[in-house]
Image (cartoon, rainbow, N blue to C red; front, side, top):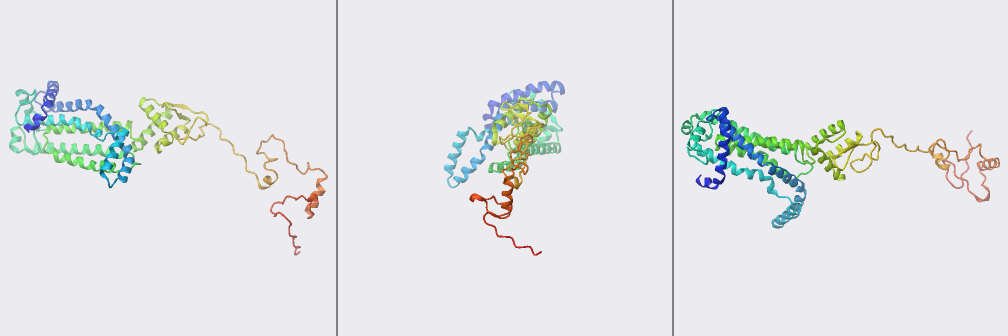
Length: 429
């Protein structure tokens, strides 16, 4: 323990100072020797640390999404160089360098708060050992030893002996019940946080080993917290439970307002955004405009949820613009479908298709004399009333089977073959 104390001595004093400052505030409200004063001091320490780590959390989200985007390329590299691990590692590093991603970025928040965690652990362990540490003097040490959270001393552990727990002014049953409940809550919050990430904020169209690893961690992390939690003091359990609850709430906010493309959370978000935009005919928040702008810029590369969003706006008479805003669309040219083809906007008249011509009309010169070219157009075909008198005897002669003069052929009538025709057999009648 002395070795660990020496390694984290640079952070132990600041952590103890922050706890003492919060304790002076809560001690004035609840009493300096109460569990509320010391417990809320630890909770406030967690909140302060997590607020300072928000930039790292944002970087973690970006790194995680970048890694999800690279999963198909990583899978191709693994399959191509599955027999050459060194070449596989080189290609992976080259891919990370070209895309500007870092696999360790997703672990930054945990790595950054690890020194504070171990410093707090050492502070509470020193309190249990009746040793002063940092700015905690003898008076504060005595006050912290008297503090109980639901009957369990702040520095007690699940594995402590009954004599040690009695020296802190409590019973072994109270300590084990409180620590067991806190360990269960800590593991459950960790499981729910990971499960929420896997079920709502993961691109379901990509099936890679990375997703399998995340599913495995969903069950491994809660077990690890349960195993190591029995060796944590009650104050450290308060710290870890608070940071898990913070992470869960922070992740819920991110999933709801900035989901991963292709995930279930994106489908729910775009459905809410479509309803809001169609009701108000505008995109209100800057964050929403940024997402609409990104969807418009994708063009043909949009996923199914984004296509549904664009088409939903088109049906409502709206069109998304390149700057993330929407405008009313009163013409078919303004409303564009997701694949770039124009769609018919609401309230516009559909283009009429020309009427289909009959076979006889096609044989006599197409649509001549029909209404397909317009009702007001004059007729150009010759009807029986327009035929000259001299043409009628010739037509009658042709019906009788006589060949036309001048070696010209008569057009085959409907249903007859061209060329000389076999004479019809006389009727049986």
